[in-house]
Length: 213
Ligand SMILES: Nc1ncnc2c1ncn2[C@@H]1O[C@H](COP(=O)(O)OP(=O)(O)O)[C@@H](O)[C@H]1O
Ligand SMILES: [Mg+2]
Image 1 (cartoon, helix red, strand yellow):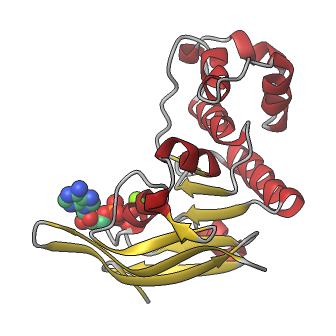
Image 2: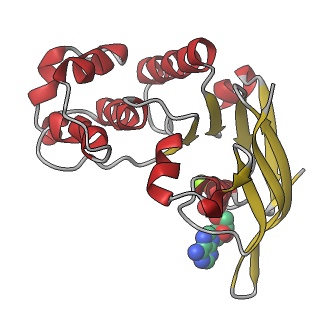
């Protein structure tokens, strides 16, 4: 398998505080990698750097053969998509949220595609016109994830997306991500502190005090 992502001597420092220290890592295309480690160890910082939301203070991230600095950030984020722990739905309805991935790609909204995405996370078509104020936390998280997945990224980063979800919602998310990984060879980088997710992980990487241990 080819290396889709290579992290070289990467550090991230804010003033005199070293948050990440000399990270080296290679991720193969199609891998499902789980990042674990204590709170505050730098996991989200590393994911934000990989997602090109912030820039490392030294070192480099090579995606698909070239430094992520060389990509147009908007296009890069369509290929490497970051799902937040605390999703915020915007606009008024679920549709406003599912329309967004089409808009940023200058594409016309295809309702059928949005509805089949909803069905993928066990939400029926009535959800499309629901107000964002009328849906539960678990439903919100599932809908937010669909924004990342309506157009398939090559790498999906999920940062504690199942934290606070009940078992049923967690299971729906797990099944969906496993399916994308297995059927579409999507590379997944998952940050979690969920015991069962860690137990079932295929490959884990532990970060402690800003370093891989
Ligand atoms: N922009 C920043 N300025 C100052 N400190 C930061 C900044 N970003 C992250 N940190 C600090 O870096 C450390 C790692 O944070 P984070 O990457 O969120 O850890 P984790 O996701 O593993 O819990 C924490 O101590 C956090 O407070
Ligand atoms: Mg974090």
